[in-house]
Length: 496
Ligand SMILES: C[S@@+](CC[C@H](N)C(=O)[O-])C[C@H]1O[C@@H](n2cnc3c(N)ncnc32)[C@H](O)[C@@H]1O
Image (cartoon, rainbow, N blue to C red; front, side, top):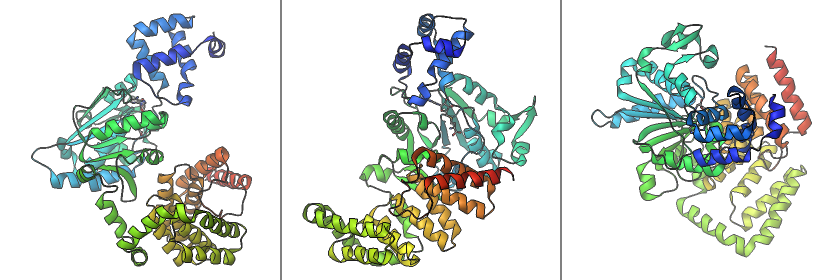
């Protein structure tokens, strides 16, 4: 009996239906595609030959049902994954809590989709590193996951070397002891955490208490959009006010539904539940606007846009569609066409004429910025990008261009920040990954360069180079050459 032969005889539909009925799974197709293999594996272990017989067993045996679900989950995790989030926790969120703490209130951290516990323990270790181990008394930490077996591992706190791929030996020496060729986390951490089985996709489930911080990272990628939104809503309800929700870097843009405002703290994006946002139903929290006001280039754009002008701009943009759309569209397409054909000066004149006839929108500023970059007029291009961001706060193209401009101006930290911003907005932005790779390799950060080349190669192969996020493609290579470039760099990096 092999997986292939049995696979062909299995009608997975009833099994899928059972999963939906029992755990309302909203797993995406690629997760569900693993179902036949999982069924076969469990049938073999139970020495069952007929799928119908196994189906019958599944219906009556809860433990068996859980084992099948466990096989479908992807538990990949490691200590200090996406480390920047833990820095934000330690340097910003926890101190804010302490400042406003009432009585003996505890700082409550939840790891939703905690897998074997590395995420939750990383949070506690980070806090201990900064504030000492006594701080654990101030904290209530819980991890939940649907996978019962992985939770057992989390409770034991015993890990193979693989879990430490992102930390140095100091981390192991300070917080773990050797245990049968593995490493066991120190007892004080084990005593400070609780783990329990929860199906986040179960809409009838709600948490008993509210959390200051929720880590919900690298879990939603397996869900279809409706379930993603439902879980996100449940987690938002489970947050205190203020309360913060971290999603994985590649997941952040998928959750920017407008339910919670996204805030940038120390170059990292997280969702912030603030009472004033809910009470006044404002679009963005003041704090975020304040952070933007601190930008070094802000003065120039403020001159361009006073508050009343912005109001006018919104009004004009909403009426423009009805009255002037045709001729405006034509003018815009003409300027874009000229720019694409490399007739930069003419393209600039053409877009300038739009600015004199109509109130410009974000796209107009960005087309002009694209042209200005190609003419090496970087300061003007920069101002245009920032103005576009005034109009559309989360415009990926503006972030990309700001990255390119900062790189050309040799302001590397700013360039990295902007390219990362573009990835937060659209995780499949291969051009940002590509530029980050180039920056990292130039700065001899080989590990990150390898990762970024790998991602851009994968994205290029999946979706091609045409969707690069910019109106005018800045590189004179085709897709094949770009993939080849990434592969060559990956080869070089492999040898290091
Ligand atoms: C890839 S791991 C992520 C672990 C950790 N959050 C991290 O970022 O390293 C995803 C975890 O989500 C869990 N999971 C998947 N579906 C779930 C559900 N419906 N409810 C709760 N946990 C779920 C899986 O069992 C798995 O342990």
